[in-house]
Length: 130
Image (cartoon, rainbow, N blue to C red; front, side):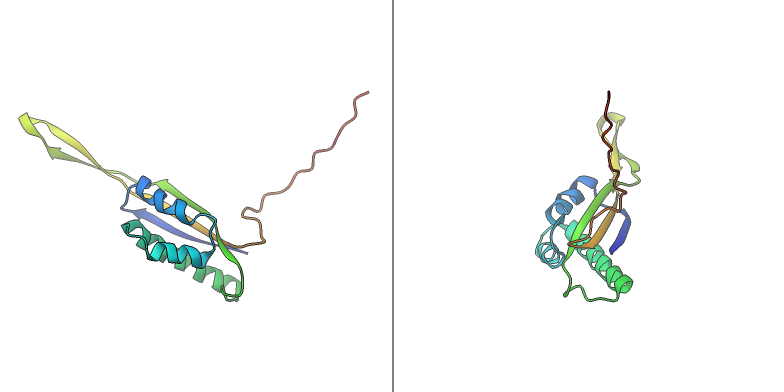
């Protein structure tokens, strides 16, 4: 079974969040929590909280303990959110554009043996040409 947690409109740039997300993608959940806990970046604190939420969602959905199962971070996506556009004063009457970026993060937690995506498998039939 799979559990999902979302974080919307996080006021961090997408690039900074993806650097941290790449560290935990495909790792075991408790290893990922350890990595996030000892990381210095601000984005790691928000991802740690989101990962704990995904683990709790998995517990509520399955009525099992995560310690007994091999939970992994099966999928993590960081997408661009809304962008606030502001202006800073510049010399000689000009203005510089300031873009305050945000992002949306989605974490999927799954057991190790289960497939990450429930996609139908299509069988290809071999046709004989005469």
